[in-house]
Length: 77
Image (cartoon, rainbow, N blue to C red):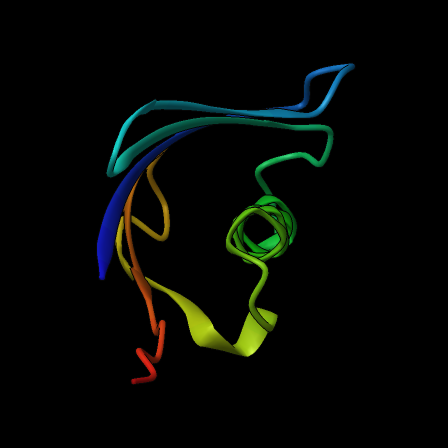
């Protein structure tokens, strides 16, 4: 599953806002340097979907506030 994310780094209060089924606005405390904010974004999305962090990866937008993430959600049944 692919989702679109808009990241704001360096804020005081972390939060994740789902604007619709596959769009999110994410606010992280970490600065946008040395991939620190990107790692935190992956952690927050993993917590949101209740999956391991290893199941979430950035497909596009590594150096941009707008990102496309791939989430590997296995469907059972």
